[in-house]
Amino acid sequence: MNKKTVPISVVKIGGSTLGSDDTSLRDIVAQHGKDRLYVVVHGGGSLISEWLDQLNIETKFLDGLRVTSEPALDVVISVLRGIVNTSLVAELNSLGGRAIGLSGIDGNLIVARQTSPELGLVGTITQVRTHILTHLLSEKYIPVVAPLGIQPPNQALNINADSAAGEIAREINADELVFMTDVDGLQDESGHTLKKADQHLIEKLTRNGTLTGGMIPKTDACLRAAEVGINARIINGTKPSALLSLESESNGTSVRWNGRP
Ligand SMILES: Nc1ncnc2c1ncn2[C@@H]1O[C@H](COP(=O)(O)OP(=O)(O)OP(=O)(O)O)[C@@H](O)[C@H]1O
Ligand SMILES: [Mg+2]
Image (tube, rainbow, N blue to C red; front, side, top):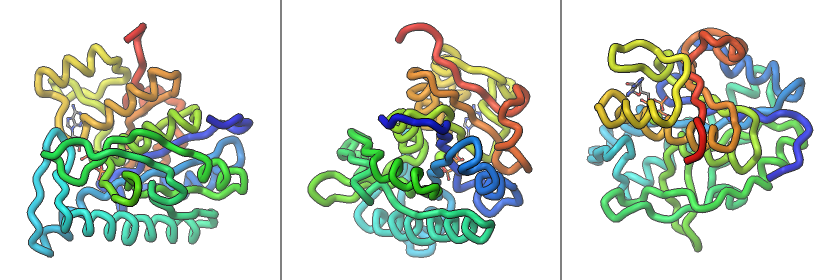
């Protein structure tokens, strides 16, 4: 945990919103260092799938997590740390930002252990060492984090980007955790976007099959963050000025922790 003076927002940019015609990167550059500091965590699921297809490497999903073989991990690392991270950093810098790309392996930011034999080289986060992030933030850099983890001594692991964002937000003592995705927020059984959701509602929607796939790690991460008082939201990152209009209740779903676990 850091002793912070300026509020920190951890923003997870979904692979599904990357390249869309949104203004989130511009908004981050405009606000960073003024009244808040940003840490960006990104996904890249759809691009990883494209590359795996092109290379004829088969993967499947279990509960929204990609089963990762050794050849698949090479593609995950190449696409996340190579293509997605580099292009985000270049874009932020072209907009006047001071972005620095890193993965969870740099500075031992994300330490993990293999989740289960069934998932292959997928990691569960055991420790987040935010020293490198606080150092970069103190110099007004925008850290851009690719979700990889290290299992000591040297095994890279594929980490779900939503979990990475959630655990970083907790450890860095962020004020805000924002998931920018390709839907307006968490939807209920009738497809209506919820303004608020707590752990009870999320559990119900998961049990009745309304909350599935990529939304599962996202709501899990929101609840982990909300539990320690972080303002956690899921918003539509494809809409212009989505980040700037965060205060507005009509924007996305706010996830709250209700009572004791
Ligand atoms: N109850 C729900 N409400 C809203 N979306 C849901 C729900 N259940 C499942 N989803 C799915 O979750 C998707 C968002 O998660 P997804 O993992 O696809 O995107 P992302 O996390 O933003 O991007 P990436 O995984 O590339 O980082 C939505 O597009 C939707 O299809
Ligand atoms: Mg996802």
